[in-house]
Length: 181
Length: 300
Image (cartoon, rainbow over all chains, first blue to last red; front, side):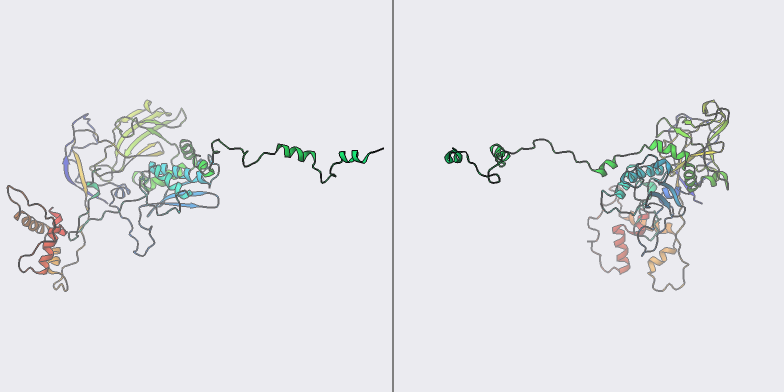
């Protein structure tokens, strides 16, 4: 369970007050706030992220990772979570996509697959995924797919996990929640 | 008598050697190609790349989504709902595949203060219940939900004609709470709605700010004879951190003038002489404080 401690309280403007039985006064709220959403810590950059071994091939360290696989006839792409496996997926095998395609494995299939996958990711709240596929040339199918995913609003890199600094550490890295955009 | 002279005057070369009419005409029409040739003065013909053509063949995403919701959508939605722990937190061990997709439209994307417009497909003589709940934001009990909206006895898909049991309350994310998952379910249907950025609701309550409580670092039990350990760094691990910070603060305040303030930072912190004999461990400590390394950051 994750717990938060009340640090400070900031006054907010008094407008449109509405008596709600669910909203307590400040004296009633508990000093420890628990968010049960298992994705919350990952969004805050403090959730556990596997480090892998130092001799591992790169690509083991991620919360969410974009994967793509082309068979002889269709192409599928999905988002892998390090614990839960496949969480969001799209494939030209699906009737919904295949219905509108001319061929399920050509350039337009790759681009449209990227657009559909990006839309599903954004609607599922996955806005950043790690991706360690690098296309050979900028005009290949794979490169155009990745471009379509990025244009759809999904960033193809994940931030690093924030680890709390110990008292004897040289530096104190900035905490992700103190960064003001 | 046939005169030989007359004959010779008519005589021509034999066929094969003499030029034919065609050749003679060709000769008369001959034009030198180095002087008489045609020039293309038009624009170059358009070059159409097949791959570029294919790049422009974009499918309609709305149609795709509609078809997806009718076919594989419910399986995919269940998968992502499990990823967010929705079924676990709402129903415990129960789960289901959502079958009626809900369309939720807010007037503006960033503001959820007003009622959303909700549409779904249903038969006319059926009754529905609509619940908008947030399983992650309870201020008092960690395993409870906040109910944001509860409409009962909705005839068909006319949400406005239902009986509102709980009035609409806009979502209120905490400062550190980035993700807000709100779940609308109609009788036995579920739909997830992720709201990225919501303006905080104005109310008479002060906004609570939380900070994540990290577990303290592991420090191994202190030994009687810590061999090969730096005495100052080793001892600092077992001292009260407040006392250490106080020492750093006192050292800092020693150089602060009450009216002129603190001295300006050193331009070249490593290019400073040490007065007299200074032991190595102290040299390191002084260097660390000049460069703002280590524990000094806790008071800065």
